[in-house]
Length: 316
Image 1 (cartoon, one colour):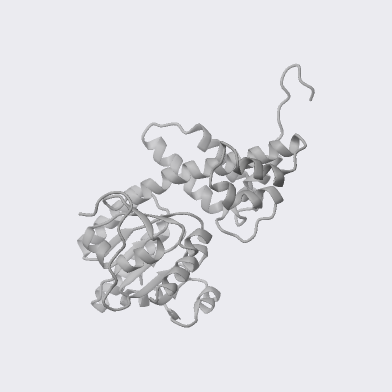
Image 2 (cartoon, one colour):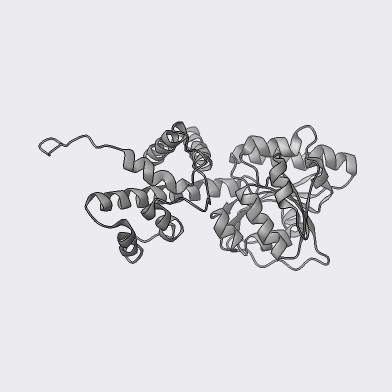
């Protein structure tokens, strides 16, 4: 049994694996960068034909359909949410149906941030159907994943993780093994709670500093060298301080999706998360204003739009 903590490097496979990628957005493209760099042969599918066309290149073949990915050794899921994961695996023309028809059963590796209870149930259904299913949501942006700096949160049967070992190693050299399917997503939600609140705290601090007459870019340097430091300052700080939100690394609607999952999981256990509720409300406001596709550093704009109620005795 693999020990919890940072997982050891996987042994190199006897022959390079063929890896399918379902979903060629920010995270799917970052996965492709890592896997191609490890010398793995890739097949990619997305519902957007333009993304499929852009995927083509040396060692990279666009798939004609999702079902084509079932012929691969490992299939990485990098889709938006739990419903899309379920559809990709169990839907009409999906991986399970294609695996049954073709007689080849890949390891399906979910990297999407999902509802942990639904993902655990999906894993059990895959077990019953004879399809290997594991998860490795990643802690990090698409940029940090592409650079090999993201941390993998791995869960699944040991035998399945061993089969997918070269893929796990290529995607996240640093990773934690957390037991049964569902635990990776549970850890990811808890990590994203802290990460999102770190982003919002940084945004609020930069807005406050600006209102006090400080230059936000210079103040960011102060923050990075202070006791308030968090890594998010280096990942998102310049975007917030300069109010420039490119290149896109993680979107507002993705963060809101995660925080809705976080709040639902907490509510099911009778736990209030007051700071998370405020943050989700700010993200909702961004979506309502048509800003769903902006980088999640855009939270600084949502905070800057907020107006205070004057305190008694203070000037308005």
